[in-house]
Amino acid sequence: EGYSPRIGYPFCGGGRYDYLLGMFGVDAPSTGFAIEVERLHDALSREDGEREVKRPKVLVASAQDNFLDIMSVASWLRRKGIVAQHFLGEFSLEEAKTYARRMAMDFLLIIISMEEEMDLIDLKKDLIQRVAPEEMERLMEDQLKTVSVRYRGEGNDT
Image 1 (cartoon, rainbow, N blue to C red):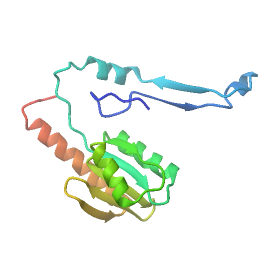
Image 2: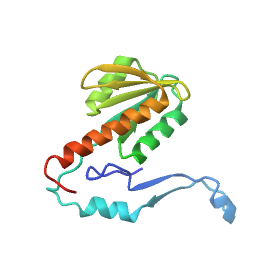
Image 3: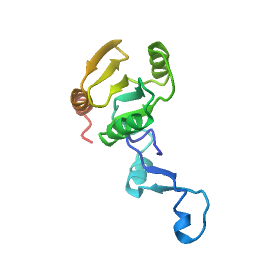
């Protein structure tokens, strides 16, 4: 996925398509990507001095190092307008928190079980909440509402 610091959502994405060329008679590994022109235009058309909406930044990790769960949650957060980065590999809680702070994240989300619970860590307050997936969704949506209200309150109507 491709991002710009001027917008809080991806403007392009891609991946591996190893079997695609085989459908056309050429068996070769391949990659590809697509650019969403309207989103790219949004990023490029913003003036340098234009204020950006400060969106919550979340580092997503999994206690079981489950790549698919991490990618699924990070993608969901991005679709909601939240900046999300995934953290893969084995780690201690302190290692993950240190990395998240170094990357200027607001939250660390550790997936314990997609069906049952997640740990949401507010890195500014150093507060850990164990929440169900539905509760995590509500908390993240509340964060976006808070950002939106704060932004509108600064006298900018965009």
